[in-house]
Image (cartoon, rainbow, N blue to C red; front, side, top):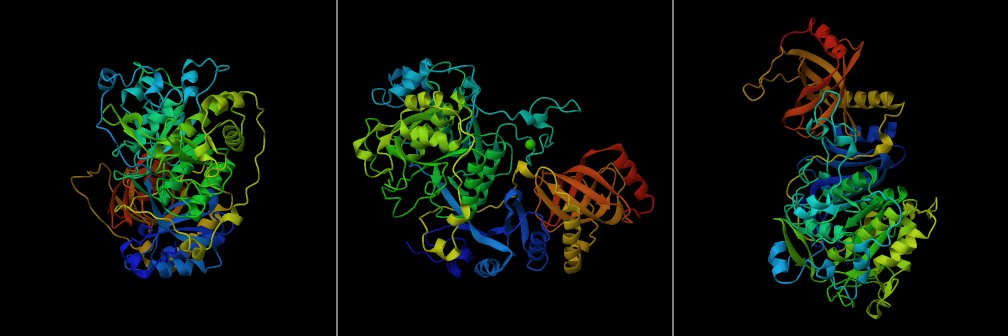
Length: 626
Ligand code: CA
């Protein structure tokens, strides 16, 4: 399918076959993150082109930018893609959940039991006669050793965490770095501080990338259904009470209430999962076509030993001929999953592909959890995929030393053959949980995986345009994107120099940064401290982003911060503020409490050492009151 990206498409943010967020660009720069050339590129884009930096994936030198209102997106993309500093630049494409929605009215467990449809193990969940492995596993006769619970990240619409199935099984991941009590005796879960410095404040049980909050509540239902299936591979979800889970689910919401989400948020979620301990990612979404940045993220997951299970799609089409992404990314950790009926046989809606789709898994009329403490039946490769993800997690549980590639290989080696899948999948088989478990117990974990040549799989913009898949839906809001690359938890030694260079560049080219705008806010933000005018430079760290800007007022309670970057209200920042005479600096943490024109921010100090406050107090003796 040929689909060029004409000018008119960008004006509305809706190409005929492919949607994207209007004005958003994801750009990967050549060379090292934080290098002079990378900083110079971003500095120039911000100061001369009026672009905003929304976030960076530092480990990849990949950046999420937004063009100035009214600018020509295609022209900016072309400019970037012809810049020698750029590896690629592409629109921020949109994707969708891969299911057709609930097929039954939401029913309570009591409703189901009254109908005799549940409560007798997972035979309501998938047909017991053809899916016996789950029944075997329910007894855990095959479990060996005292095992830890591997984390499956469900990258989807979120989770209805209050569902009794999830509360009883305690399946939802709790971030150890954001639980317990901090140094001040406050709960880390709700202290407004990024306790584990992963770029996310109070991310105690996953993240909502759509709203930029720590509450990944499911306002759609898809993610809750998928999560119930992941759990269902390890525990009878119709038991009462449900037994303690053998695995953990990390809910990462990047699809909105209508099931649509952006590439940048998908990349954020995959990064988060990889950097925060997930060994498996369940991906029941697609339709965005090829994206170099998503390929980067999945390769990043592979290089960190994370399995990536992906829905093959529900178009009844051949993925060899018309690829569905992310299932079609040719990275060794990707498992592309078709849907079968519960008595086997390829489901009529399921995509397939002799070269590209790996296996079948039940995906028809699957009864699973739904918001409102209910259950619904749904069909789709969305439902088939979490069975595979849950099984992969059980394999990790049995043998944590297995690489993601070994897990994929062993899982695909132990399938039940299904004639309907022969010649239209790479294996001709349907998932067999028990075989996978047994194989993982008897295989030694290897230290290495096949080398994956990412650059050989990257595509030029022209090649992407020529191979676009279908996708509809659109998000109309735009939020701050942050990344969480633990590999860059500390700034490189040359960073200060680079930042000075960056700052100088911005200083020379952008009068905005120097503008001192005095402002008073009354009522809403009552101040306890005298404010003073100041004109100092500041380096700001937000998650793993490094920004520069100026401070125009200061008090013992906070500062007005001016920067061209977009900061999220409520977000936490670390600031290094230069003294008025430039001879010293202080380090403080603060929370963004107000913003104006997305350039001027009020930051309230959250954590400031006494020595920092003493220094600020000294500075103010030579400053005028604001
Ligand atoms: Ca955190």
